[in-house]
Length: 251
Image 1 (cartoon, one colour):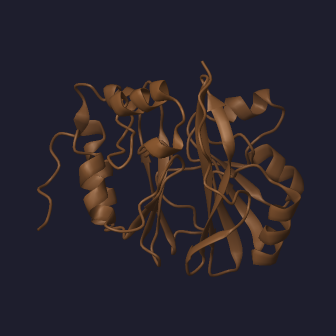
Image 2 (cartoon, rainbow, N blue to C red):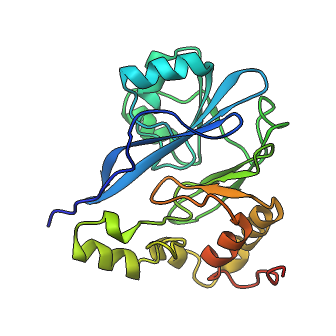
Image 3 (cartoon, rainbow, N blue to C red):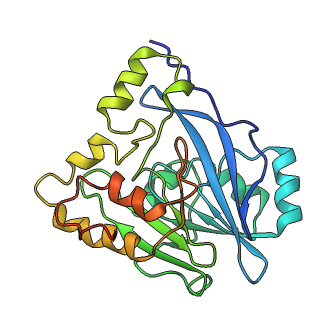
């Protein structure tokens, strides 16, 4: 069965979000025969260096835009699915440091390249004054490093929330799959398969969700589907309502 999914045009070009933060919508990728839209986030640090989260495919025109924006210094893999193009970016920007999320180092080595450093529980000193981070442990399935850009109050997620818009899906079966998978807009949540990895152990993800709420994000950028431009805290309560023990939502 062929699933057809619309992208977020225009592709492979910088789209400003607010001061010193941009997104780039990339091409469709296929994961387990299911198509996914892709999106990376770029933050320009006070030093002028660029922090590039989940890089998408690098085209010649995008490379020119990136060079004009600043020096590519940090290439970030937020989880072991989102690393596909980091090796290619490293070839084009050899001075950039490649940061690995948990479990991704062996996958890169199989492709013939390596990361420079691992991401930890605390932000690297290079960006600790501007970007907060935590590791959300997924146990058997997926660990994701979550980032919060303080100045713009922007939370950056990859697969912890997905929000596929039904009108962009030209397959009734895939629309059905996203509905039962809990990742259909406007109610995109943590995908059901990822939720199930926390069955009986919600206490393991609760502190991470509480931290995301405590950051009080204004917006939430997602890698897949429509991202949330406003009401970030409300969206977190909605998308993580399956997590037992969350504090009451503030009025």
